[in-house]
Structures are given as structure tokens and as C-alpha cells.
Image (tube, rainbow, N blue to C red):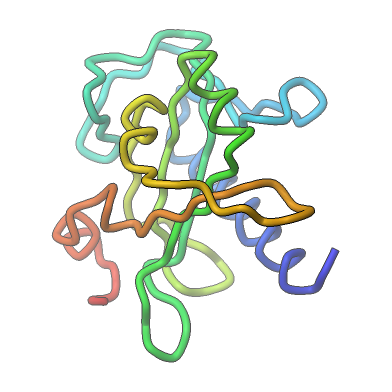
Length: 162
């Protein structure tokens, strides 16, 4: 694994741990149990101000959750972060009625969470215009966090102004 991929994986794991701490209704799911998700709902999750949902009045126990995180901005141009979605994983989420939990994080190694939102995989499917052929790696799509969040939701929570 390249140093950049290892660093990205570590940052994602740090953000994932912060999300699981922020949302106690979720429990961690190990890769050996289900490689396509990070968590599942362990206690009924009712949307609230700090954990809003899209088109879901409640998340039932057992709902599978894939946590995706990005930095609010990255690079010299301070470009908005982009979520990296893998097609095979996305198809698994669709088949199992799963959801994504999207997180926007500060652009620092601590990956402190600025904002989160839970979105059904079926709605995310409508946001993906095409999958990118990655050759010998899994096909993927990228979504800017501004496709999921209104910038005011992130700014309100103390994010940097991209």
C-alpha cells in the first residue's frame, strides 16, 4: 500500500472513530463480519440536530451504515473535499437497504468532525452520474461534500469557509 493510501486510510479510521463516539446508537462492524460497511444501528436512531437524516424518520436496529469522511478543504487551492465511493460497495449497500453516514472533518490529522448527515444509499445512487473505470482497481465515483451538505450546515458548525 502506498504511503498516501495508508495515510488516507488512517485518516478515515480516525474520522470513523470520532463518528462512532458522536453517534452512540451505532456499533462498529469489523471487516471480517461485513467488509462493505463500518457500522450498524444498535439502538433506534431518531434524527436530531447533530445527526440529521435525509428522507428517514428513524433508523431501525440492524440498519447497515457505511461511514464516509472528507476534509472540509484540501490542497493549496482549498478545494472542497470529495467522498470516494466504490461501485461494488455501493451495490452491496443498495441490496441491503443500507445508508451512508457522511462526515465533514477539519483539515488536520485529528479529523475532528464538523458535520454529519445520514443518507440512504438509494438517494446517493441518484447523485452518482457515472462510475470511473480504475483499471485494475475497483471502479469508483467521487462526490463533493457540497452535494450532500448545504455549505451553511458546515460553516455553521465551525468549518473553514471554502
